[in-house]
Image 1 (tube, helix red, strand yellow):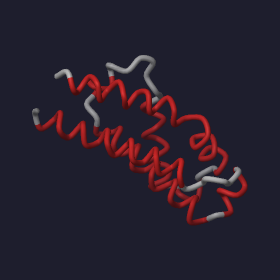
Image 2 (cartoon, helix red, strand yellow):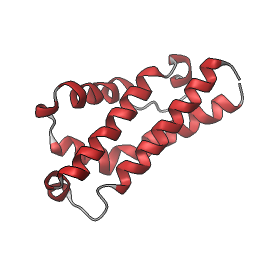
Image 3 (cartoon, one colour):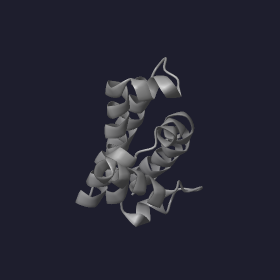
Length: 119
């Protein structure tokens, strides 16, 4: 396995772990509860950063195997907002990510992982 493939595989693993954690932290909370629980909210934000950073480092050739492709640019943009514009983070956007965006990303990670395994 080449260094690029190993790095991509590690990044995909990081994304998978971050998705699992994002699902764990707000368990039993609704949108208002997540926003009110600063530890859960901060933990979710940290894992959104992990996902965005990992996505930004994946080779474009690997992201190209995903159909339909997630909004890669938006994923990285949310990471940048969380990292550099924390006061402007909209809790409703975070709740939307938590409740509706993770499944598509999981499918994408699975497709990329399978593509790496065949290289």
